[in-house]
Image 1: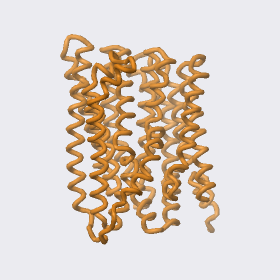
Image 2: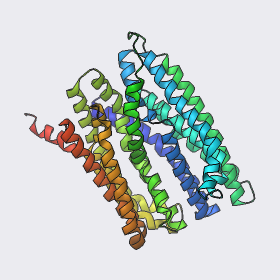
Image 3: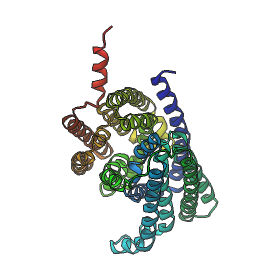
Image 4: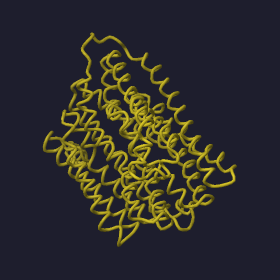
Amino acid sequence: MSLHKRLASQSTVIFGARLLGAGLVFAVQAMIARFWGAELLGQYLLIIATVNLIAVVMPLGFHTVGTYFAAEYRAKGNRQQLRGFLVNAYGHVIAVTAVLLCVGHPLLSLFGVGDSALARHFVPVCLLAFGTSTVFVSGALLVGLKRPYAGFFADTLFRPMVVIAGFLAGTALATANAGFSLMMWIVGVGYALIAIAQLGFVYASLRMVANTAPTQASDRGRWWRFALPWVMISLASDFFFDIDLLLLANHLSSEELAIFGVCTRIFSLVSFGVAAVYAVRLPDMFESQANADRAGFNRKVGEANVVASGMALAMLVMMTIFAPLVLMLFGPAFQAGSMPLVVLCVALLVRSVFGPASLMLSIHDRPYASLPAVGLALGTLIAGNTLLVPAFGLMGAAVSALIAITAWSAAQWITALKMTGVDVSIRARLMARRTVPA
């Protein structure tokens, strides 16, 4: 099987699992909107956005570099270093969870949100954050160990099953608020158990890594050098729309916030199809880097870009056609998000065309060079929301996000090109194909 077919087939399987899981989640969100009202759906989306942001900070960046170091240590047969990495990464999650349980609720009261939905469901939220963060770490490590299915399925399949089970249990109660509370408890406890089960699979997989490398000092300093800047990069990239949703809470009504939140969840699903392409290819990229095969690394990045950009374009066309039908599941009011959703999918295509510039900067030992572009994106997003949302509502929010993502992607691409001399955009791969002799 050719490389492009292998990438497409493996990423299609992962994306198909994600699509199945997302179908369950969307069904639950649609039922929340129809049976419990748009206000509770808005609360649910804000809670999930907050959980995601907390969870991405809990490993202190180690989940963001887990794939890289797992692939490197696997290639070098260095099980000892990999075991140390695991202990540190999961240790951070456990320590931050303990701190959160002790001081989180008093801090919410201190900031005047002691009666918010987040505070009312605080313990389930902490459990869900623990589970989510642990799955982040485990998923990254399993991808690096060339087990992408095991890395993604906890989040793509099992989490949606817990969510739908929680909703079905909640509907048995008399009131919407009581049902929602029971749902959050089931989701929090259930996902924490799933995360622990996946953690056991990671440690079982650790035994399959060779232990032939000579004993050496801990790489802890190198882990931190890469992990710390990637906390901000991952926070802004993977959870860009969670941040955006919290920023928009002061600009949109509860119903508009629910509509835009659904649009961003659909966008996240669509973007996962593109991310799956890189996930399948990442271990091979990092193995080339570990073996000092820079030409092979660049070639593999270019090949992944072509497939990712093609998939992003296909997703844009599909959303242009089917967005109204998908949003109709949530109720007639949600069709107002059709065009904003298409605009968000344009942002996905832009991001794919510019390529993984932040990855290239980290490979060249310059991970901090991505941070100015992250700051530019967040500053542009805040300014865009302030200027466009009051006048244009949902469309203003979507256009603001598109402008921010475009500025961010372009800035990172220029930075990577100047610092490394490597063009990671799809343009480089297309030009290389045109110059190949017949």
